Image 1 (cartoon, rainbow, N blue to C red):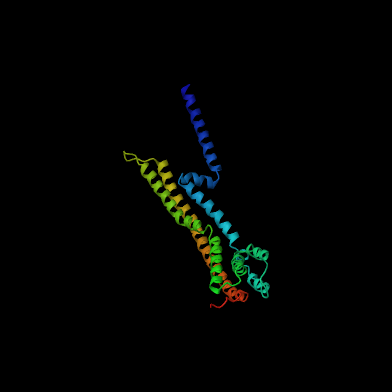
Image 2: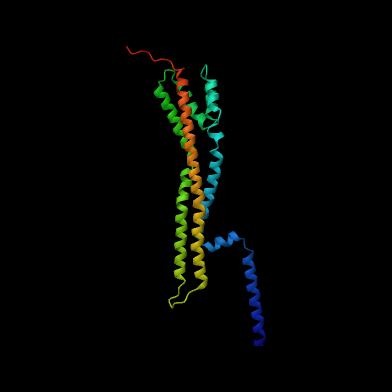
Length: 241
């Protein structure tokens, strides 16, 4: 009876092994890679999701039409050629774009203080420009931090994989092939994922930084054009006795 059960059990084990291998083959490639990379991959995946969301948000926000509309300065100069606009018109200008907020800052200053000096008007433009620039730089430091931290997280996963490789060595000199392969997978996958996240994040960080610098220069030049234009409406200060 035992001799008849032996071949049956062997065939059963072979069937179970084939079923397990087919289940592993049906797993999505990305899921199998994540499982092979081990737990150190999860911080990298979190960084990738955050970086992707911030990059998409910045791409939508830092469009030229939303920051520095091409014809806005000429339109403001045309509207204010003979008189200053009403406060509600200035508020609509401030809601138009970042450049609109800068120009509205100068208009608010002239409307609030008809005897404003040129230096005070320049200070108003500068303060509005700093506020607009701060909004344009929103999330850029986060993207830069992810670009710097992702390779370090990948290196951390590499160290964890190396620890598992050395831990697979038995005291007697033998080794566990499964643990050895898992340690190598953890080390290599985490290194690759760290670089895959860091390189695009760094590229977009540089791109956004260059675009913000370009917008800052455009707003500065627009303010320089508006200063003499608005000083025409400033009332002269009374002469000192």
